[in-house]
Length: 187
Image 1 (cartoon, rainbow, N blue to C red):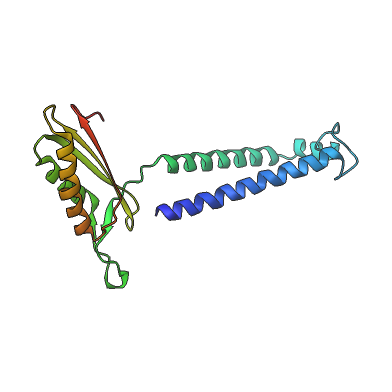
Image 2 (cartoon, one colour):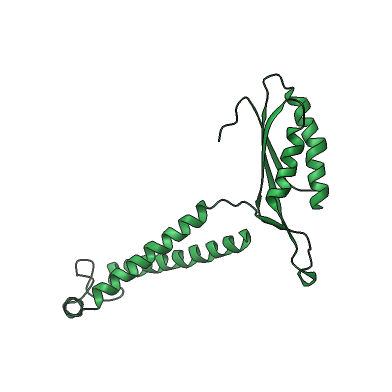
């Protein structure tokens, strides 16, 4: 899904960029007088064009509609950028012709959190899978007690919980970022 959004973003930005480039080039050429003899001091619209716009009842509503459409599309694009990229489910069957069995990402991260929270010195763990269902990335936040040995806890996570998850997901190269905090977890 993320690759699809990335491709859509690139296409949309390319179209907008080309449109703005074309508008800029046309404005530059018009200002130089290449597109007509009016020059930079002449109004952009001629008197008959201004009269047509003023007397036609559909012109200004159309301009308003186009402006609103651009605003809504911009808002949707901004919301898509702000949406978290959490993975909600993981495919258990790579071959879709055999079926579409999935596993909740919350179940996977919950098991990882339970394992990490069972380690000595760990007060709380929070894990989430991000990026995409086919190529997930793991982010783990672990809150330690004040008397916890940070190095030992991190080594235990790296040699225990993370390999268990990678084995279960059959992704030995699963990228993982582990953040350790001492004291209360801030949300």
